[in-house]
Structure formats: C-alpha cells, structure tokens
Length: 111
Image 1 (cartoon, rainbow, N blue to C red):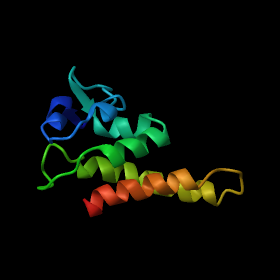
Image 2: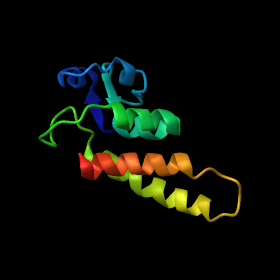
Image 3: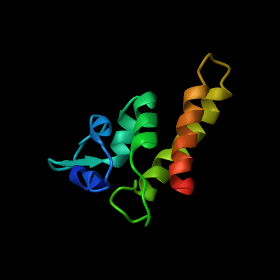
Image 4: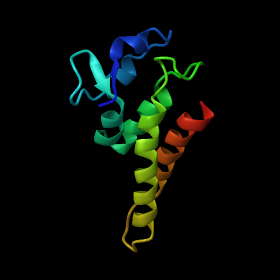
C-alpha cells in the first residue's frame, strides 16, 4: 500500500479540511491514507476534487504531492477502460472520465 501521513498535508500551508474527508485509509495504519485507494474507491467526482484540491509544491518529493507511482497506477488502467467503454456502443458518459484522466495527467506532468 502507498500509505501517506494525513498530518503531512497540513504542513503545506493550505487548508486541507475539505480534502481530508475523501482520503481512504484502506490497509494503512491510523492517521494515514492510501493514495491509490483514495483515487479508485471514491466516486469519480470525489477523485476529481481530490486531484484538483490537494496542494502541490516543489520539489516533487514533497509530502504535499501525490506519489507519481500512484498516479501512473491509476491513470493507465483508467484511460484504457475509458477508451474501451467509449467504443462499446453503450450509453456511458465520457465527460467525467475525461476530466478525471486529465486531472491525473496534470498532476503527473503539470505539477
């Protein structure tokens, strides 16, 4: 599990109270959250809010930033599944998955 301390996010100088409610503990110890579980186990709307509203700082190894491996492990399967459902000839939304993939890509590259 990619566990991260919830308290480290408070050191970034941002109000993170609106983001902490989206953090999923999963198999992490108390006071920590799993970044990958937070992205996968929340609804798409909550994952978008988490990606857009979690603080980002430099350097990239800062505890404020999301782990790049968690973003890659989320982004690659999500894009593949989004492409598959878009081409499956069934009524399924493409707007929210596109925003979520763009948010994850932006956090990974645009930092």
